[in-house]
Amino acid sequence: TIEGGEGVGKSTVQKILGRLLRDQGIPVTLTREPGGTALGEAVRELLLDTEGVPPTGLAELLLIFAARAQHLADVIKPALSQGQWVVCDRFTDATYAYQGAARGITTQYIDDLEMLVQGSLKPDKVLLLDMDPLAGLERAKRRGVLDRFEREEISFFERVRQGYLDRALDAPERYEIINAARELSDVEKDLAKVLDECLKDV
Image (cartoon, rainbow, N blue to C red):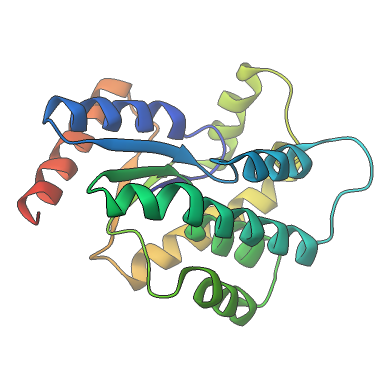
């Protein structure tokens, strides 16, 4: 999975990983959260919408896990069962960072929903694209109109970043922290190294 705050380049990195895997002859499914299914994309649109009354933190959390349950059933598990690699733009680590660390939702609630929806299924490798939140938001602004999450205060994104870094510290064997503030060519070199390490374990 590819994780990180706003503007760190997750979509670009996902495309690069897809290309690197296909170059090795490895079948791969590229997907995203929230999203990946019709239901997931509808939830995504609802969560990012800047109009109307925003959902409460708990409603947001439940919507995300509802979309994840459908995503797992329709996309991720079938791809894995067919021997494909799955590269997902955000997954449950994002929930711990955004709804947990940033929104302040009790971690136990997220733990319980993770077990209910995923069971023991976790990403084999988490690529954490890390950079200063303010710089990331500047990148996001250059893309166009900001969505509901991107309009949060900078303190929100500082908590998101710290939430991610804390999780990486707790499980260093699963996480690879990549400095996303550098040139894309440097990031791509790191991705190739990480992929080589992953292929050694296959």
